[in-house]
Image (tube, rainbow, N blue to C red):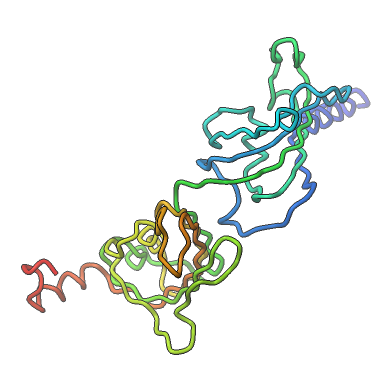
Length: 260
């Protein structure tokens, strides 16, 4: 019995040793849609040490130049791939990376020996997203019938509050004297907006991150949106008119052949 218990104890210790450990060192929390995710290009400063003896083997701080890479493309060790996901811009973290999520049995040249556990301190300087990110923070209770989920050519009515990444509000349909917007998905004129409005259910509330390339681009909007401004939108979906009904309305209204 003692031998069996010792065996399982060893398994537990081995399993624990193989886990990635992430510690927040500094920096503020952010919205889920602002956190690093697979597909994002991240800019980081870092310092790496051997866990066994604390010897430093690499540091971008020493070189005075951060590195850039895209998460999810295996450009870095798996410990980084997993540990950086969910991190906010401006945060500093410590990653304790077991060898199986680092350089494994082969190590890395003369610097990192085989089976070496590593410790990195990483500062996430910036995130560049290529796609719209969506966080449904108030879903519809009981779910949504498939035929009610928003899609291209649906006419939808919604309220929204628009923010810049620093939290400054720049526009809102909830301001006094304003009314909800009504648009046709796919015809808004901004791809980021169209993507933000798809896949929703009437009554749903979501936060959406729109990178500037899919919003108002490098020029922005004079007096309203600065150049290269990423946007964070809070959207409440009020009403959806199905695209089939919209199509029938266009026919009955005589506007189908006119291209309206």
